[in-house]
Length: 268
Image 1 (tube, helix red, strand yellow):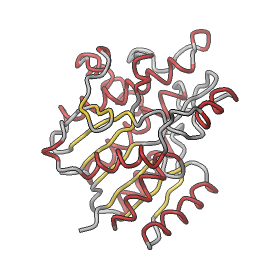
Image 2 (spheres, one colour):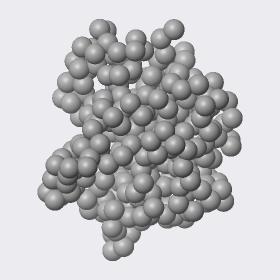
Image 3 (cartoon, one colour):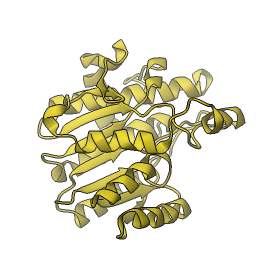
Image 4 (cartoon, one colour):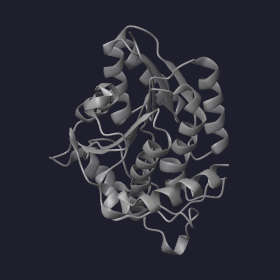
């Protein structure tokens, strides 16, 4: 039976590659993206891969209002969501606060998917949540007491790393609080995409010789979304097909609980 699979960040990179693979399996794919033109192009590619038109929704994860509107549309349109792939995210080059008052990296990469998952929980009973994290989590630790950050202390790689550690902490805490949902996070590899900010970083992510293709990373996302639950560790972090211990701060249950409470407060 076909599954209903929501892929955020589905208009490019890993998300689009996975969406095409889900469509080729016969699943009902729901794409979420920020850029209308890229989203329309992604719809065409997913249709070609699977033979039917995927649903698509536009939302900017730097706005809680847009995340709430997205959740309302998904709740109205689907009685069940089998997989929520929280794949949207990126790196912000310079310090920026969102209209909601939080540092843009932590909001886009963690707070927004946290909010979306909570709002969609009524449709996720017995479902799978797959959160795209990164080995970059080793470079940053989220501070639950300060999700707004400070311009004078801002470092884009540390902010990105902290947001990816937040993805792993959220996954583990979700497994504790929502046992009815199987939650996993993963490092997709260093993927050949338009990731990053600045010419040097973008050049690296397009041309470095050892990069993983989006298709290969997409295969890993699809495996985590479709493998029997008994084969996965609820709350686990995966590198390739291997369950892996994240950095100490990213497996600290006290920090995970504090971050959860702070995220609930931040996202309202």
